[in-house]
Amino acid sequence: MATAPLVEKPPAPVAEPPAAHPKKGILSYWRLYAAISPFYLLFLAFGLIPVGFSLYLSFHRWDGLGSMEYAGLSQYRYLLSDTDFWSSIGNTLIIWALATFPMIFLAMITAVMLNSAVRFKNVYRFAYFLPNVTSVVAVAIIFGSVFSTNFGLVNALLQAVGLDQIAWLNTPWGIKVAIATLMTWQWTGYNAIIFLAGLQTIPGELYEAARMDGAGPVQTFFRITLPLMRPVLLFVLVISTVTGLQSFSEPQVLLQSTANESTFSGGPDHAGRTMVLYFFQQTFDNNDFGYGAAVAWGIFLVVVIFSIVNWRLVQRRGED
Amino acid sequence: MAVTTQTEPAPTEPPRTEPAKGTRIRGTQRRGIALHVSLLFGVLLSAFPFYWAVIMSTHTSTEIFSYPPKLLPGSHFGDNLSKLFDSIDFFGSMFNSLLVAVSVTFLVLFFDSLAAFVFAKFSFPGRRTLFAMMMAIFMVPAQLAAIPQFVIMAKLGWIGSMTSLIVPAAANAFGIFWMRQYMKSAIHDELLDASKIDGASFLRQYWHVALPVVRPGLAFLGIFTFMGQWNDYAWPLIALTNPDNVTLQVALSQLNGVHGTTDYGMVMTGAVLALIPLLIVFAIGAKQIIADLGKGAIR
Image 1 (tube, rainbow over the protein chains, first blue to last red):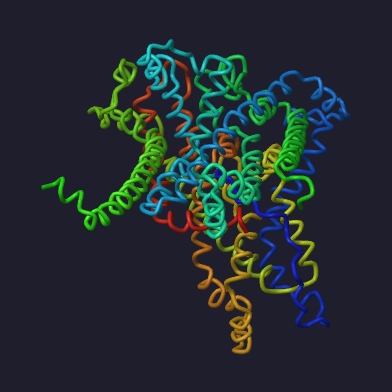
Image 2 (image 1 turned 180 degrees about the horizontal axis):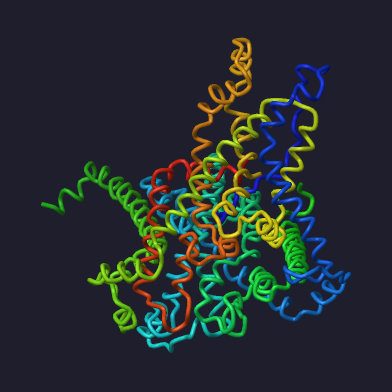
């Protein structure tokens, strides 16, 4: 799904109700197996076999047409020394950070405000969620024009206050800021609504007690709201890490009109070439399926490591 | 006169409390106004790109390129529209998008809720393992499977057709997990037992007992699936190799193609039109989505 799936907690152990007919053979459950089989069949054909095959592929050289040639670990060795891959990791992390921190900050403020607003709550929630509903392609096209050098709105604003124009989509930092702005715009309201759901579970008596103790709004926020919101914050951070590190459509659409060689090149100097964009470029532009598979596993590793780091940072030691 | 009334002790009592009460009310009122002003500012930021796109769709490219930027509607929407229809097969690609989004949504709703029903309400050998396996699948990023998926599709001869988009998306782990959670709490065991005593078959239980109860959960999943499919871009971009037979998102991105020749007025018209079906679906299901959205985070 383009919109972030609501990844839930890791599976809680399922309490096994006592089997109704313990003596029956496995065949008597055929209806149940049949009911769950579509998912597993699809997963087998388009998930498990492909993932296994991509591991196999990453040890081979293959252009997608000819015969495969065993390459051992050489593609992974090349991946480690591939400066283009490392720079794509750098690009991805910078864009992720530029988008995520303002996004979480703004979403938190918005959620606190929404929580104390009595009227029009649903109207606001509707309006704030709207950016998340839209297609990345349409939005990237729109943002491309907002950040355009000659007639873009951002530059018109800069000019109006007497500043110089910035060639947003033609400078390495401009590209990253433009992509990050798009992502922030798209996800702030979504996260604000998730934060709001968390805020609403905090009992009002806690705030009442804090007020009696003479705590101001800032103190209350840092002493009560933020600590109690940690699980929700963790959820938002993990989701934004997993989706943010796999960003593809935003840079691809935003930069394809300024791309110097291919639609996957990530704009001038490859400054907007994220990891997934690099994967696409290697695989489908260069027809290097074997190396593309190795890149995919590299991306997978980066996402896993980065998610764990994030998790550790937010989850205090000693807590579960 | 005024001076004397103020000096009189008795009437001063109420006025003294009155202003105090008044300022407090005014204070909260002022805070309330400040709150709504900031919230409205946020709404403005959320909505502005939409407004800007609509405005641009009514101007020619030359007008868009002029300074200061146009902030009011122009009169060239019709021209842009006809140029758009000349440049891409707009309705054809929209039909493709609808075909994919609608069929995937119905398949997902059926397969996911059926599997979820089994996982939520029945026990059978291997249930734990199968469920844990499904949750693990959740974590595997899409691009890991992208190359072999492409190869498999090519072998099946599905590349270039909508089948390559519909079939792999027809059931998913997220939906099964979501519906299972929903069914666990919404469908009471007594209800199922009663229907079993009445001799209801498995499918009857699913169709007549389970589904009616979980309609809100289905609505959420359905709308989310539709929006996700409508907006999907990466996979259709690879799988639909024939530029004349693509989904709307891919067609739109083709418009945005070559540097310098982009006709922004026309491109914006396309972008705006592509959002309309989505906004309709969202408007229908907004209540459901917004109500259910936070559940995953706080459960």
